[in-house]
Image (tube, rainbow, N blue to C red):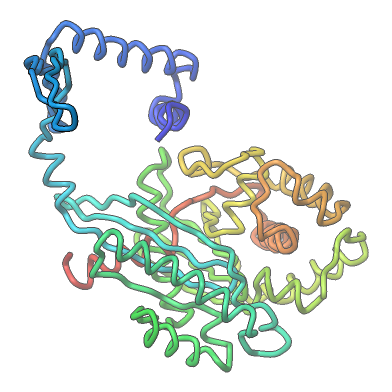
Length: 399
């Protein structure tokens, strides 16, 4: 973690303090630590550990090469003695979840410590396993290979962190592709990773677990809401009311398949955009119209929407989580992106490599959803199926 990362995290925890002041406080803190160590004082950070200055004695030694004697003067060094709490955390085994979707593969490492779940590291690759799914109903040979190569990388991380307990779930692409079993069997045989193909309802349930976990961070009292996860080949909707699920809907509508069905090539004219919206509107027309407080959006498309809105050059969970997305800003972004070719799209601040050609379809889906539910804004939740899968692993086996 760099100083910049630390300041960003502190700014998320203490938004009322200016970043410049946080940087000053952080520098002052480390200056005090260094000064106390120079004085030879012991420094204890409760539950983390103790820094102990130690001065070594000067020694005389003989160099065996020339039989000459030399004197090495005394030196000061710092010993670190790890705290009991920190040591216990380190010794708690890692758990892992893998979310294998139509557009991206993701890996999350976490720990369950003293009843609290910590999501500690994440990896993501835009594999686009569902390339060609809309027309051929199969995982193409190129996509098949991309998926295997990505899982090889994930396997290296699982091995590096000595992870024995994990849960890997496959979503819409695995439900639709005729050769999905071939992919699953190959991965199990050659990489030792077992993939569980889950139903749309199970996918929505896992997503809801992650969303509810993320909602704890919001300073809002939300009793009823609809969650939306726009994926590569399908979109999941959940109506949550007063502590229980009222309904779960999975719509055959995703950003990858939308691109392939319409053979989308940028720039897009107004006539094509209207045609796309009409198609999306028909797809979601069966969603019940109910009274609720908030739209909660999650997943890769939603996260990229937040990055584009804020023009973030790198992903930052603390900045994106809880961001309110307004329909007015969404429409401006659609109008802007529709006029760009792929080369210009790649250069937009906040754009994620590997999603340039599908992001506009995702934004149009959200635009129609806003209209369908007559909402002017939505809240971005950076927790979803990936985190929900890890939470499910913990619950199912009491890890």
